[in-house]
Amino acid sequence: MAKGVSSDPIYIGHREISARQAPFIIAELSGNHSQSLDTARAMVKTAAESGAHAIKLQTYTADSMTLDVTDKGFVIEEQDSLWHGASLYRLYQKAATPYEWHAELFDYANSLGMLAFSSPFDEAAVDFLDELNVPCFKIASFELTDIPLIRKAASKGKPLIMSTGMASLSEIELAVDTARNAGCEDIILLKCTSTYPAEPVNTNLLTIPHLRDAFGCEVGLSDHTGGIGAAVASVALGASVIEKHFVLDRNGGGVDAAFSLEPEELTSLVVESERAWQALGQVKYGGTVAEDKSKQYRRSIYASQDIQPGEALGPDNLKIVRPAFGLAPKHWDSVLHKKAADFIKKGTALSWEHISQ
Image 1 (cartoon, rainbow, N blue to C red):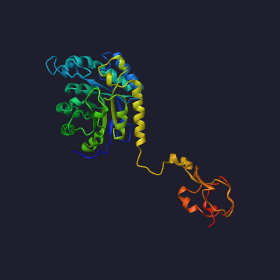
Image 2: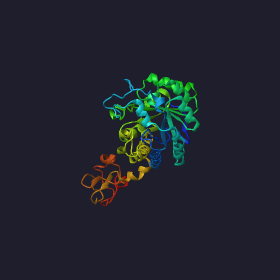
Image 3: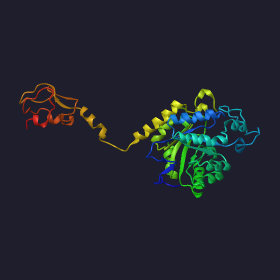
């Protein structure tokens, strides 16, 4: 496994993906458009207004995802699943984004200043998206073990984002090696927890810097938790990409609505993740230039009473107070019991000139 991140930055379209830039925020539309093109267009527009840097679709059909059967394994049986009782085929029919929408939605996103791309779920989808000139490809967590799909996407000469939900180190290593052997060096790995929704206690953000160091890749987070807390926290651990599912209204339906951000939350994610990135800064002691003016409000030694020449200096006529124009408090012991060299008016910032030598 490689160590360290390449010094050459990755670009998705015009956007540099690195620690030198604020996190790249992706609004995942998924199937929350509920098969309405008008809703999908409204989602793109609102994502742009919220400040997202990109929108992402999912490119598949029910037939490219699974079989139209209801045998065991083809129906979701988990009682705690959002989709309990649904057959995989019917669920994917409901969630799929029609291929004929892709060009229109991509063009619309671009016209609003956003990048637009998608997750292909089979090799034909890779070719379809490549013909639309997407700036990158995204491999979903469940497809990370689909080595032929990764090889196909990596062969197109574009950056590759791969989610790592459920994957072992060896599975991630195989995926990364496959991509590199197919000619792709611009790889971004996203820490992901493949539960819907995900719980913060299962998010394990500390994996992010380990992923970066282990594979020499840019890293980020594909987040299925509620709210933006986990996503903002990931920035402190080196996440340069954050992907969140997006919905216009959680109460309005949508297959992923329960764990998707609404517009105001997406706006907050964009703002707060950039603030978190700005706050990282560098190792710094001694205050910043911006803090210089504040130093005057530290404490120093002042005359708390009028002091006559030759009078002994001590707690009865001196006090450590704000502001900081007098001798620093560290000199207090050196000043005690010394004599005043001249008259010192109450409120005078004490200096060495006031002290008889």
